[in-house]
Image (cartoon, rainbow, N blue to C red; front, side, top):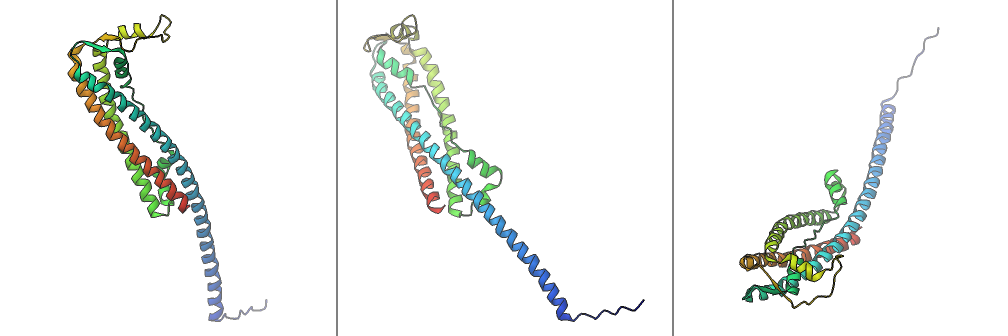
Length: 239
């Protein structure tokens, strides 16, 4: 067999081979980074679109609750002075009806599916805009604040319900308002109903507490609704 003699490669050839391999690896790495950035940017946009939709639903829910709380405040204001001025043991039927409606306590539930997903899966890192992240986190804090306020308010309203159970003449009211088939019938709103005045001071104190809470929550809900609307505008401008 003839001897095979390989010509020794020059240093430049080795360097050129190394450079080609290095460039291929580097370009592959860059291409992968570009692909990941494109994917993450698309995920970021989808999260933002979903978050905007959730915020829109929140503003509707907040507006509905603000409207309810304003209505409740009118009811409270309409009964407080007559109760404070009450001398005997009788109260007009229309005031008894107003008192009976005050304990209803609808909750606001945030549409936070996207926000929880962002927090739970590390998705918040996909949001590259620092101002957007700060706004979202601040809004989340305010929503949790509402939840705590609602729990506190619910305790006060439940206590009011217990007081009214003893104060209002439920049986007589039912007889005045409904027929035997539980249909609302004609009634005299000024007809006096016998109440249990032993609970009058307790009732007034509880109504004043709920009134203060209610006014604070109207302002709080309004502020958070405005924050949600501001975030929506900002996200639409940025994305």
